[in-house]
Amino acid sequence: MLDQAMKDQLKAYLGNLREPIELVASLGEGAKSDETRALLETIDDLSDKVSTAFDGDDDRRPSFVVRRASDHSRQVRFAGLPMGHEFTSLVLALLWAGGHPPKIDQALIEQARALEGDYAFEMYFSLSCHNCPDVVQALTLLAMENPRISATLIEGGTFQDEIEARGVMAVPATFLNGESFYNGKMGLEEVLAKLDTSAGAKAAEAQSAKAPFEVLIVGGGPGGVAAAIYTARKGIRTGIAAERFGGQLNDTLGIENLPGTEYTEGPKLTESLGRQIAALEAIDLMNLAKAQKLVPAGEPGGLHELHLENGAVLKARSLILSTGARWRTLGVPGEDEYRNKGVAYCPHCDGPLFKGKRVAVIGGGNSGVEAAIDLANIVGHVTVVEFDTALRADKVLQDKLESLANVDVLVNAQTTSIEGDGNRVSGTSYKDRASGEERKFALEGVFVQIGLVPNTEWLENSDLELSPHGEIVIDSQGKTNLPGIFAAGDCTTVPYKQIVVAMGAGSKAALSAFDYLIRNNEAVPVAA
Image (cartoon, rainbow, N blue to C red; front, side, top):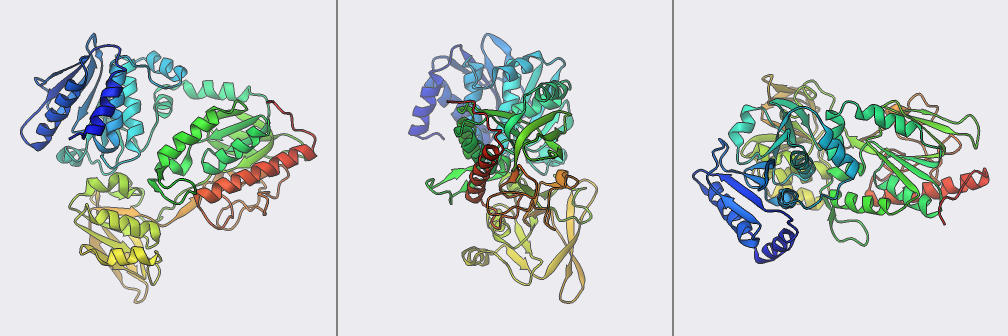
């Protein structure tokens, strides 16, 4: 199961164990249980601080507990094999159970330890889901740090009957004390914010008490991070207010068009950007800070106000808005009702949950056709539904799509509704735009891939000029119509929504903000 290189690497990691750990497995018959036994025996052989038993009595088989030998309350259970994207999560569970300190902000660890109440988490993941590890690792850490918290992490492909019985149609899916807790990606900070009801008020008080920033960047994606790096290197006190650090990068799988980097993945690039931000003392990063309202300064050189959803008010002499964009929704009946019940937006994450089933991909651009190609290797049948009279994807993608026997394409078709039985999707309807005829077909899943919409609704009453599509109107220097306010990235009228374009635009907006501050005699260097 593990090649020699992986064994050598795992052995090196296990050398960091400070205390003995125990692996206790509950196994049944079949290949999955055999593979689980082989994996645990391999881990056992790699360290004298690991002991393994196969006498567990848990109903989920195969499953196994990772726990500290001296304190069985420090444990987490994996149901199914945590391989693929989750192998790193398994390694971290082993290390944390063995007393190796996590590389997490100590304040978050103390917050986790201080939680009162009993929390039993169950979380479903897929091995191809790049959003799942964050949730798996957050819940693992909570279970290891707080004895009143338990976490069972379940590989959905192994327990298909269970996820169907619970109506899980998208991962990551997290349940708390038997009830749905959250569907989607969450880091430790976000989980704690949902559990600790006083956290928001505390954060708002601390944020409002901050001195005015020279530059405040709204958004933590590639555009916002690039802007922060440039302003910090100018010695300017810089703040970043990010609803979710990394933005869309967190949901991006393969990146092959970033100059100087042959291949990376969004979460990895986000981690790299985070390390770069952390190394710059001039930057104050405020994560989970969702913008609610902008109050522009009354005159050049004055202070702009950014009101956050948690009630905090941040002030700054200049602003760079880089709030990015999100997946565009269809806006048809049934879409909201069946979100995460058959309606999905990430084929990489949720595709394995539709193994052998019939699905539709709405959208015939590059993202839609790429999704259809990926899904065709997993599901029973894919129907691509395109509004235009022809697919808009690159020819090489269309050629690949045409070679797949289990894919159909509908063009000139307007999706009009998504139907279901109240619990999950059962079909979709569309209008033939040539004939006007309404048609429908049965399926179990709908993957929406129709582009992006800018995250600018909060600016609609701010006097900031927006395009008819809701994008922030900027000039060639990243300036908006309001003095001292600049913008960059996918939330703007820049014609190409690409990572490298956002990074360049963020850098340019930062230089423009620096020029503005100098001309208004307000720049105050804070670093040598």
